[in-house]
Image (cartoon, rainbow, N blue to C red; front, top):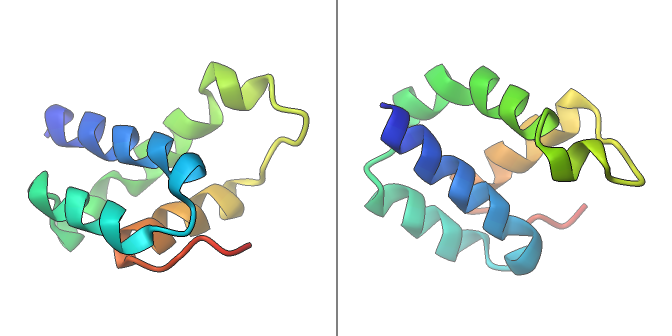
Length: 83
């Protein structure tokens, strides 16, 4: 499971560079073997990791927890991150 969490975190890190390519990132999540159930189970941990990431902490605009969750959900569902 830890390996899958790392893969999801890696996919999340790619979102900012590929914001309009949600479907491509979703394919990577599926290829990594991440099921909806595993995603939902690990979502709180993923959000916590993202909020405590050094790049996020040093960001000029610190996102709310709900915003980070929304990004993860959009990416998992293959929706373009358009907000």
